Image 1 (cartoon, rainbow, N blue to C red):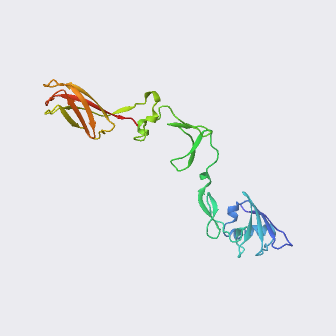
Image 2: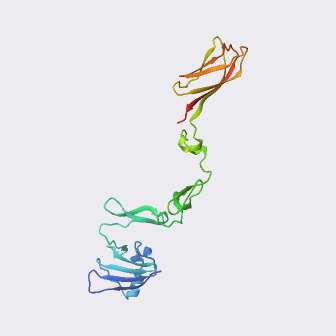
Image 3: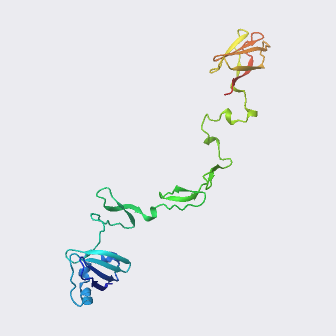
Length: 259
């Protein structure tokens, strides 16, 4: 492949030299291109071609056209820099950018394929892929989304593991089933005897607000009944019909105002 035509526009300065080549623009810009084409140019020109240092060279190549300047030794063609002081970088497959030092063009490291398109299917979202690329996907799993932005949680998606601890409150219950009190403490204990009133430790009980229910499970050898149950701080005191001795068994429940 080679230069097939060459001509100069005379009478102007700088002059434009017009070249037609079967090479690509990249090949035209390689070092020593004019030297390699010297015999071919001489044959087309019917003699040596007169180059001037101020020549601008317009090349119509196999893959497009471009302006070049001629090297000082007339051996090569250099891609023309349109903005003074800007150096064209070598960018292979990537996008060019202006750097922060002198405003020169540089390789951004970003390939054209890395640029995210604005095209997105109805109701889909962009999600980073395993390769780190934003990808058009449909939302699935516990929720779906539509083009208006409305998010719908799927049926049966909210499981216990997904609820923050201590965040199921009375406000979440329907008014008809909201309790006034809840069972805070419950236990089965056996008396030690010695007096009709016996105290049982219930750590955390609050005397001012908690209330107790007591049931005799085994009335023991004293055949007693429970007459009274009083809650004080950390303590439940049960009064029996007589000394319960050490074998009376009771169940108790202490309730607290629900909040």
